[in-house]
Length: 116
Image 1: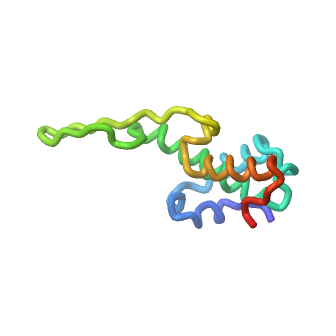
Image 2: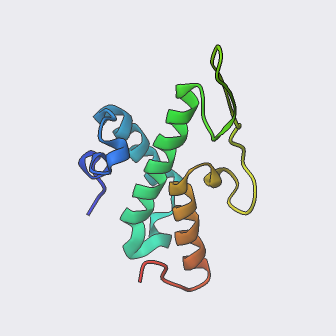
């Protein structure tokens, strides 16, 4: 089964994303992932990759991203931490979805089935 726009929109976080935006990232997922490597988990990998891309792209276009690191009450001010790549997951650490994909890939490399 191939992952569809409706599958991604079924995730509450992405319910309001446009079909065109989701399809854009779905199309790229199959080019960026070696789906044969993931075997029966290929659809899961595509879902994680697409969700990660939508999350990171959304944060980039929203302006403010990351946890609040400072605030002022009068006359209002907020500061956000900058999300940067770090650790073993690199850029994948910028979203929970990227972390899930990293865990799935690590499980395959280590001969484990992280979904079982």
